[in-house]
Image (cartoon, rainbow, N blue to C red):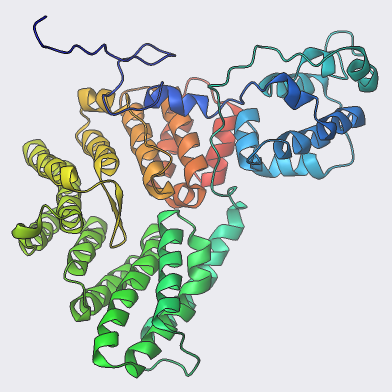
Length: 486
């Protein structure tokens, strides 16, 4: 015995790639992305449920779709079913609503194959073109799924199905003027009721959850009124409470910036960030200016001024009290700034500086478990996502390969998870892996549809795929149409 403990390397169960040491799953990121686009194989008792039996007896594939989705726990969203069938969410909805059954045997066969519907439950026969009485099939034998059920397979739920293409954009466009007016009258808010500080804090927390989960429609619906109410509270309360309101107002403005920047209202985004800098300095939270500095980088990304972006982040990091770096909130603020600075350096082509910033952020992550700190997600998993972003910016094939052995945990905010798959898609595309890039974009869409549809890099990647992919599947064409790529 030499006293050394040896640990065996873990490999992806599908492709045998070595897994990252902190990948707690059984598959690499690439295979995880692919698996979420396939329906799971379900156990025998699933197909024996009364609702499914009724659906099969109706001999209407739309009723089968609906019963199949609703019989699972949690219910499978239409968007997820659409991805498995290589259809649009709108097409699935249309089939489910229609009273006219689909009679195209080739389609019925393909869709049932995708959902692993047991052969003897199919009321049609693609070769003999005859229809069976499903009631007799249920009466004559026990439902036996094919292929065998594997408990390891699972579907990846989304937060909500992607909205109809025009509707989502219309909601934001209609809401932006109301948001602008709320800022115009920040010092002269409309008369109205003002709730207690705990109630306002709970509402601000909800708005930031919507931002982190990329629910932009919810933000533009509710933020103008909330910002106005916070402006009233700032005028009515005593100085001590006013500082707390300034903290809440900073976070509300940040939630608004989440919409403005994502939908390319760069002038509005810059205005919001300037207001955030003012309210953060008025607040009772010494770490809030660092969070604003993190967000301020968007202004420089929009203008392409990477030099100033780097200077601003370095300056903000220097303002943090080094004596508190072992405390999680301070370590998270410090690490997030360096995480962001690494992406700025990589975008400027400065690989060595990017590596230094990532190393500093890694040290900070030792003191800060994964979580949301003053509106910013930071921790080991968030750092891994930024490491991929750096590798993608630098077109570092080795770094991209390392990143693909890991996948973001489901506990991360949806927007951040989708960022990982968007960056991985971009990186795979640079390496000529067209199908992998497409699969990553589909998974990103499942994680945060509103974020993905508004992201310019998604449209750019899809435009390249439309021109260069060796085989244009209906799924790729539908995704490109949904995102507005040409």
